[in-house]
Image (cartoon, rainbow, N blue to C red; front, side):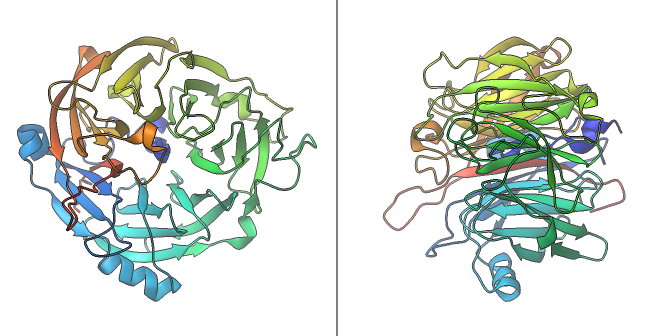
Length: 441
């Protein structure tokens, strides 16, 4: 397994959201076997002020029947919420980002309106542990070596670390590792948060590279920190200002010895934004902190001159040949050639099946023939409504064409959460593909 297959994460990412996106590779465990597609509706469970719903689709059935696929449906307001209350004394609210550990045995689900991080046994669909990290867990990203999860505590403006022992089912918040992003100074002596350099240091999506030492941490107001997330406390090793890295990125992943990082819109102060940057990982080999804005990033694409654009989720096509970046406001996918770091084209997601899909987080099937995308609802619970509003909440299946150079919409599996007043409040966000490990599960 090559390194980028192990570590692809964003938001986004995830995310990074969301995203982040933090995208799966093209092989991994069980690439010759079956796979699942997990997505989470972050709207509340019926009759509750919390909860949410996890949908698990059989990958082969989804590819075969598209919108007719019937998923497993797991109410996060049930056993998951009960476990969090019993272990933390508080209720988890708004499940937002979901990622798997490297062995695909556990799902790590972060709750953006509270500080909870939930660990789910992936094969049993059973919540195992819940950690309350504090104010807001926007994204919780497992390290490729499976030794920790790094948590973007967004409105707390801190980076946190959870020690993970999946075999023993032990998950411990390491308070001594916490890095305050809003107060103190950077290695150069500059303020970490500053009206000119970095005006809003809410962390969005930490992107952990293949050695599990460094995380690229995007910031809401612009700028970026590269952090040694193995150190205790975690420490900044490279610093970038808002002119060098624009704000609100949550679509990032590693391929070909580079870490790709995006920036997006979706905030009142910066509604429309679309940038993608690349960093060469070998440039960060030294242990000493770098001067500001070094090592230099490469600007791969910038479309900030466009109206109504918002770079968010991202994924790689087979063998990492192309990087796909979703524009949830412009209803399109931008394709980047990872060999040349130049745009290779784009294609629409809006069309006959949806006039306003609002594509968000993405991930690729193990054999690379399809890409799955979460589609936002008409009442978005995260992201500015102007950026994240869609009219077909659900899971979109994209057919990969021309070796990944382009794609087209194949089907949409709709997701609904209709309240007693007849209003559909569904708002899917988190999405990951899980190759089923060859040894079972």
